Length: 259
Length: 250
Image (cartoon, rainbow over the protein chains, first blue to last red):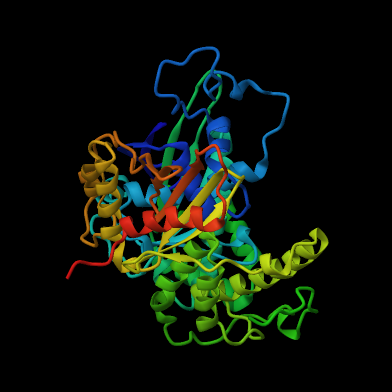
């Protein structure tokens, strides 16, 4: 399966294509079995059926041999397991980080374990360099001072662009929670985060298969930090998150390409 | 490892906290980087099923079970704590399952891992049927990551997979020097691609190396007669490990 990878500034800012990523179902399976939160054997096979990876067989397909491209995707009598899609979503960022974002050391990729996964990103990842050239081009931030050690990274897999929009909003909330909770220990990470979103189907009118790497950066980190500190002092985390959800809020205005 | 009741009552620490006005504590050790390598290895060990190594590392990092560590202050140490709790819960569940299934006592303990003769790899064999096995192998020593991929690519090339070494080199796993995405701007026209097929004795083996320092080897026993004893299967996988990571030549 050959998928285009695009770096995007913020929610819907400038885009920078960074080539394609060829991924076999077994490779997604390996990432999912390591980083997915649900225990599923043979994740690669599920991925192949759900996504139509078109990776086997190598020879010309014949009707007698059922591959995901030929038949499995049309088995509409049964529902798809949410946990399978979830596992794919949770692990795709690890693969993208290793293949495309310079996480060349195994120890660069850490899965985050918290009691409630909705409150934290899936990974914290060290990139090499920490602000790659494609990030600079997309955000127009050249050589920013990166004083934090790892990017918080949220990972999603969805079937359509509409679902991707919703997924990005949820992911931003998770990043925002990380900035809030991590503030006393690493205030320099405020406003920085990555959301990797794998869109694998699209609609019949607009079929889509792409991996988008949304890079969130602050336009005014000082103001963002002041706002977070104020909410922490007043113990108003729900209000903070509500403002983050509101694309017209002043808080969102402190993030680049996030309104 | 001490086993605790997973349904313990909530402590007073679980009550809602007052507004957070505390002074920032001393730096949190840069996200617990010092323990990060061990954290990665624990995840790999658990993927493989190597409970012995996982417990050894967890016990070295988590001594006080009662004190809740904040996941945002110390994400790695907190994760160690959480993993340990989860393992205890799973052990309790497994004990009940094994008892209800009437599993003989001698089959209930976790298997000790296989180790490569070079010392960098550990692995567990999973039996899926009388003929189908999977060796789950992982890198115990993350400092050997570059060599792990170089060795795997070399084995793949020997087995006839052209270009495996080139692809592994381009990927650059285990090499700390930074590179920019400009270097990768071309189409990634080859997957990691370190997978090959080989035979060893009565087993047909299909090793595949992932992007995360793991190697899964699917093995099929091809002889008409099934293996007479476990050692017949173990020997083959041990030989594979030793070929992958041999004793260094002086």
